[in-house]
Amino acid sequence: MLRNRVSKLAAATAAGAMLMAAAACGGSDDKAETGASASSDAGATKGGKVGLAYDIGGRGDQSFNDAAAVGLDKAKGEFGMEAKELEASPGETDAQKEERLRLLASGGFNPIVAVGFAYSGSVKKVAAEFPDVKFAIVDDADATGPNISNLVFAEEQGSYLVGAAAALKSQKGNVGFIGGVKVPLIQKFEAGYVAGAKAVKPDIKIQVKYLSEPPEFTGFNDPAKGKTTAQGMLDAGADVVYQAAGGSGGGVFEAVKGANAMAIGVDSDQALTADKAVSDVIITSMLKKVDVAVYDFLKNYTANSLKGGETRYDLKAGGVDFSTTGGKVDDIKSQLDEYKNKIISGEITVSQTP
Picture 1 (cartoon, rainbow, N blue to C red):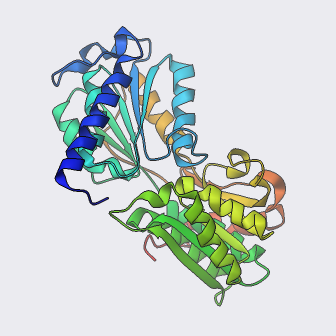
Picture 2: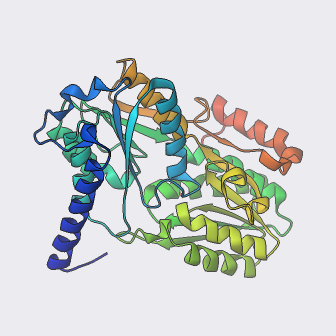
Picture 3: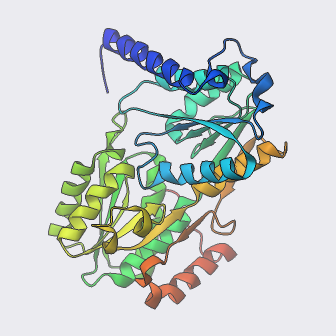
């Protein structure tokens, strides 16, 4: 991601041109305006004009971004909202993210949802420029402001449950965790998974690998690396692998399929969303209900009842959970539900750090 100054400016210029074209192609309602008060007529459409900025992988990643898209689609259908969807590119700069948000805001889109912690600094900066526009950011609590809603999750709690499932299902006493990028957010998944697995089998072997580290974020969109990393774990004895790696997860599933092992999906119910050629190896998924959070935010916007600040979706709130599609965890569901109830009651506290 390190580039010289000239190439950075060139990339930002090119991205800005493409985003302006995207903002204009939807008709007269989408034409960009200038100034910080462009949201004054945003309610002209029945339910408002919502802008959604995806993380790397965008709609179609079968996981995190697709979950946000489900919430957007539900809101569009129920509230008659018009939407503009834009997508991040691998290796882009913060300036490019800012420009994406700025183009939406100046184009009359209000509210605006940024999907992913990578937008943190950009949301904070652009929201201050457009005080009349409501912003939401998924997975980040650091971007604060009177017009910013922070939609965050207890990933460690849901991951605890699938960690327990992995340990209960493993025949070898050896399981794996693959994170897309080694950042605090993804380490919450690791922490919960490891704690859940060890709660079942204290001496279980847990292999942990990350596909990239900041400032390199390609680990969220590198299926080939996901596949080779998973193959290494499987060769080292793992028979269950949990991936929290976005678009790289497809490669993990391919490796698991080839080894006749078991996989655990993330964010969406990936037994339903993953490629049919590999979906049968997914025994459960850690459900992170980004769709619910996005839908709630848009519903509250249309009802004029938005509140800025943090909303945390945990097990008690139904914001995280484990999936049962395919019946592969039916035999252990009662045990997983017992752990779930203990977390909700406070009997079990799950650490957010490994």
